[in-house]
Length: 115
Length: 110
Image (cartoon, rainbow over all chains, first blue to last red; front, top):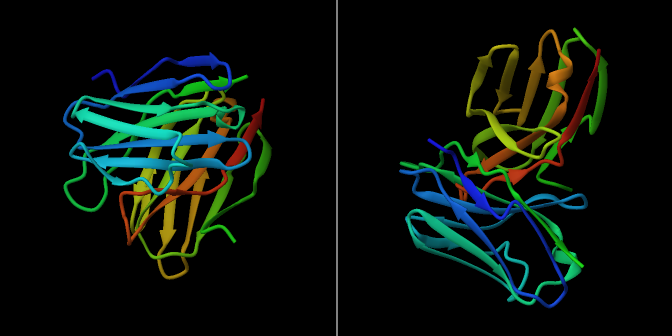
C-alpha cells in the first residue's frame, strides 16, 4: 500500500488567496483526520470523518476553514481567504476503526506558507 | 494545564545510553499512542497501548493506567533515534480524537 498520500507537499501563497490541500487515505480505512502542526501549538486536530461523515469539527479555527470528504478515497481541506497565521504543516491521517479507536497512519504533510 | 504533559522537553545523550521519555495525562483514556517525528517531518506511529507493556526492537513502551503515566524507553540508543517523540491519548469521550503532548526532542550524539 502507498500509505496516506497528500498533495501538494509544499504550498506558498499570498494572503487572501484560496488554498486547497488534498488527501488520499489508505484503502480500506474508514476514518480520516486533518491535523495542523505549528511551533507554538504543536499538533492539533482540526476535523475528523468517519465513513465520510464529519464527526467533530470543533478544532477548525474559523469559517475560513472547510473540509470535505466526497468519497472514501479523497478529502480536501480548504482555506479561503488564507492569512499568514495559517502558515503551518497540515497532516492528514487515516485509520480503520471497528470500535472506539484504531492506530492512525499519517501522511507526509503539506507545508503551507502564506506571505 | 495541558491534558498531556511530556518530560523532558529536550534530551541529549551519547550513543549507547538508555533513554526514558515520560508522559502524564489527566483525562480518562481508552488508549495511549507514542509517535515519532523525524527531522524530515514525517510522523510514524510507534505504539498504541491501553495496558501493560509493548516492545518493538530496542523500543519499549509501558503504561500505568492508575497513575495516568506512560514511559517510552530506548535501549542502546543510536544517532538514528534522534527525533521528536510525541505522546498522544485517545480520551474515553471521543476516543477517535487524539490529544497530543508537546513532544520531546531527542538528540543522540555519536
